[in-house]
Length: 287
Image (cartoon, rainbow, N blue to C red; front, side):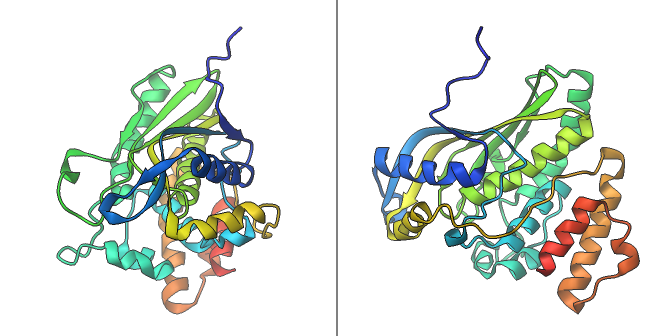
């Protein structure tokens, strides 16, 4: 009997296992393309599957992932709150994407996700088999010239056999700078929705119209493939806050993060109000 899922060419239980496979597959099967004059190796219509969305963080040492930035970006997605000053303090390269007229990111994901996430929750509570649980990220307002056009088209939640799948659809995905952060951030949202609904986690499925490697950066990815078994000791917590308490937990988290970032202080009383996973995120930001 069919499982109801395709036979994924690229799949793995953890992102650490999946990432080197993905890099090699795109490089070996891709073709030349040079949008904006930047040479890439591009594979059109890529699809891959992460079997365990709680193992979505890249800890391959040679990738040198900015774990603090990854945590902040993912928590912004989950909370629906975007703060360019905050985000740029963890990754100064992000400053070039800020609109100088507004001081904001034109294509910020967080407010778009935040505006739709509660609807998705209520929809899946009422109709678990719904095919309409879609968060649209790339929208008509993005049809203009900008340095910050969302690479993600949509996030679709499918609840099947009491397990929540998430399908992320991308117009464009850079395997070096985009994929590791995208997968971690989206899997956090998948975990959050599963906790809210009281269901298990299914598959994380990622599909990209253009999956690409910039050729001037391939050496960095080649090193990742050659040293894929050398990992850093960093454990990312699994989301554990229900829908009723989420807003309050996020508010406390961001208050503590700001105090820590601006004053190098943590209010222990407030810290103790956080769930175990949120406490672990604060601990990782201090690491």
